Length: 108
Length: 144
Image 1 (spheres, rainbow over the protein chains, first blue to last red):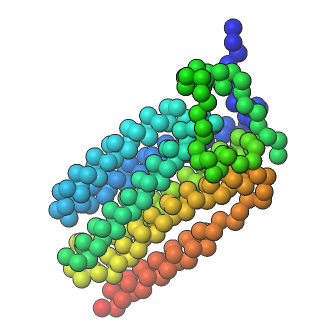
Image 2 (spheres, chains in turn yellow, blue; image 1 turned 120 degrees about the vertical axis):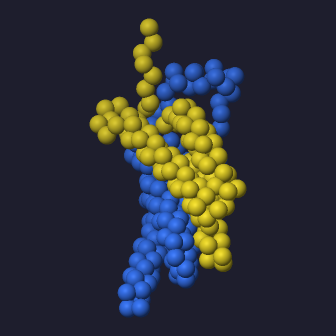
Image 3 (cartoon, chains in turn green, purple; image 1 turned 60 degrees about the vertical axis):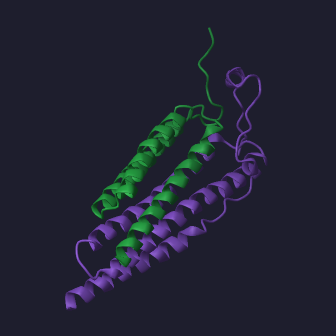
């Protein structure tokens, strides 16, 4: 019978590092999703139906993609960089959409 | 700092999944240098980057909230300008988060001292300027 696989460097880890990191990922993904939905609602309120639809769709796609990627998460997994980059890109896009909404509101 | 060791069993499992070829860990600019650090340090670095991302997201959310507030009345151009700057700062902070993660991970792998957070003074200054601008705007509105 094979012993359970362990990650080197985490023996006797009283800080539960993988759990804390995964919880941090979940907080971040939840925050990005909620942020996207807030932008969607704001765009809808300002009567930008296309932006609202794109934001809502992006929130759904992002949530599914990141959660699927996080299923393969391990302390040494290659997928970590991809998810980090995707999440960073999502925040940058959200910033761009927020900037656009503010400018449109300003010029209206 | 003791370098972590790879687990042989997990490597076997990975090779089975990937058809015998070990996948290259990306980015190569980070994982192509130095030796594997204690995994706890890498995980802490990852959590730090995520915390920076959430900080950037908070700025974006604050900017969007200001835009919504500005749309309730007319002549709130100041709020819109502050909102636009907050969203811009949030995006920049997200990019800084990933850049900081790279720098720290490289330093960990090379056994160098951790680099100082370059973006922290800029963030403090930005939040202070936003707070002063909002306070000034609130006083201006009260006086009028």
